[in-house]
Length: 95
Image (cartoon, rainbow, N blue to C red; front, side, top):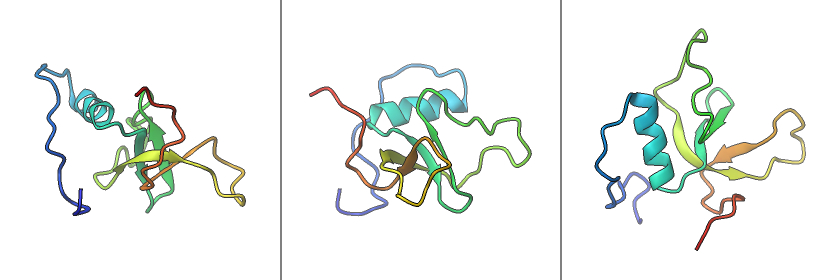
């Protein structure tokens, strides 16, 4: 993809998802993202445990972005993982 905002030409398989959370997770898996992140509030979640903020004050935000697991910066010692825009995922993919 040349344009950062360009939508991939692939489409997910035809199934009727239960809810918005399922729709988001299906999209992330189909497009091979590792999860969501929000750089404005220093927040990230992985596929399989998406949007743990549902039910919390502030809840899920509309400005979360899809991303890939990245190495934690050396100065970080408070997170198990980071998700960001770098497309080289640390997650092993099947060929």
